[in-house]
Length: 185
Picture 1 (tube, rainbow, N blue to C red):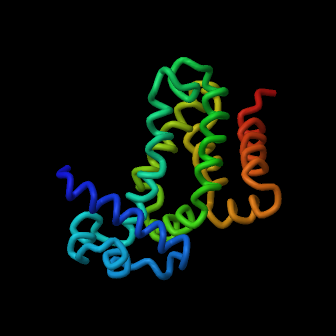
Picture 2 (picture 1 turned 135 degrees about the vertical axis):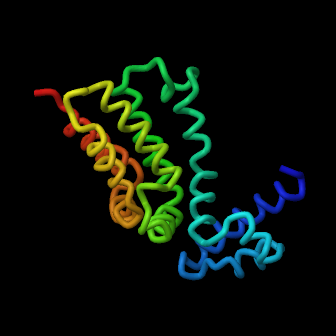
């Protein structure tokens, strides 16, 4: 990516995030993002295509470090650790990410509602969770349980849970759910 294109990309994502945090998703339009980023609307439209594309890219950007960690052998989230440990650590990291980005999680869900299960970031997370569950408990329906665990990160639910107990409550609750779902009698 050219340096001016990279600079514009960062400015657009920053502007979208600022608008989202200060005014809510209903006030994030390609026009407003372009104006706040100091670029033309066409630049935003060509790069992201729509509000949905913008929110997808913003979530992918915020989740990039988590994606790198699950692929890195040097990370406790990465290959080499037992699947149940990796799952717990991934869910902890996702709880932290959701806690820091509640408005984005909610906006992303609404924008992607019609095709949520085809969203690239969701697919990545679900594939990872599904694979860890399948490795730890091949007797379970890992695909369904992966969706079930990820449903815990619904933006409105995250906001509700962290309002009383913070991210620590979310982290502990999702860990407990994962343990209960994958418990071997």
